[in-house]
Image 1: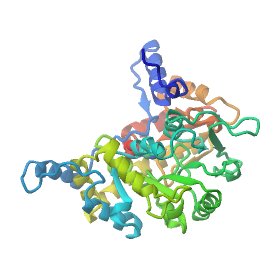
Image 2: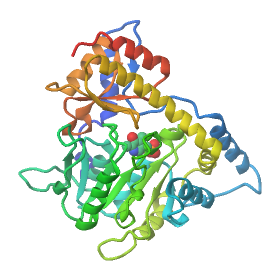
Image 3: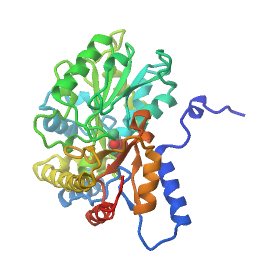
Image 4: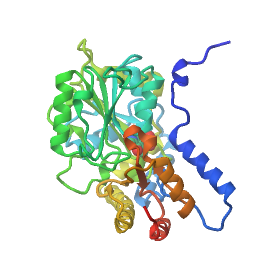
Length: 402
Ligand SMILES: *Cc1c(COP(=O)(O)O)cnc(C)c1O
């Protein structure tokens, strides 16, 4: 018989969200009730794709049925879309061949590790989006920092004490550093000075930063950076992964992109960009042409307005949730320039708080500990939900006693 990939055995038991779904099902079957369970748990979008962008998807399908409009494989993505992304998000700083269209940021994060291989040193913010760690473990990096020694993945605590910004002295040299801003799960957005510190550190220590900017379109404060490439020197040390999932409601459509600058090199001076282009043709073959036509509609002037309207809607949900928590005297961060609110329950176990909120209020949240050890005693509230559900959840929470 073929043996199982030992890296799969190294994955921590139960991916976070299936575990939450299991607990929700268990609770619902043990406590049948007329009171509906409301989810403020997962980061999944709820609002329909807005009409102009949806029209782009329809048009993309229609074109494929015509001789003039038909297209087959487009490994790195439609040239027009790559140029448009460079214009809209990066002030034309990048050539089209530095922008790779993907079927989503998570998919690219999973594939990226192939560039570096087993044994790569990896550092992640703690707490963090689970795929950074799980993707690393799958590709052969496993473990934690222990006894002042490096064992696989290095967790960089982001806590109230350090303002949710990590101490980079914990990062081993020549590491792959995953960094997410606006952050999932904390909702914190790093400042320009902080990202400059990250870039300076990466350049000095030979690290490559995988910068996850999936929530950049939720930033409203103009002083906050939306891309790592707003920082000088980032082209030599960073890859940016991006997505239309949360900004255009494309979670089920599947479309994102990665920026791999030509200035980015490995230790032997080989080009990371050239390898990524090679991988795109070898194990990927490109994103849907229909989704890409939808993305083009999202990036014209009408589409940009719709993305703004959609993210405004979720930000209003965030404001309502944040307000409800504030009224209860529960301290929280995030939610201003991001769709997540990170609420603090000092001294409590986050799975216990999760269970209490589910049992007493029939609201599903996400326990902070599921995102890493530093998430202990926190709960993540997601602003992705229908407005009526968010309002009702806030109403139910009014009687919450910490
Ligand atoms: C939702 C999310 C993504 C988007 O992933 P897609 O594969 O593009 O849907 C990426 N990063 C983070 C941190 C997310 O929360």
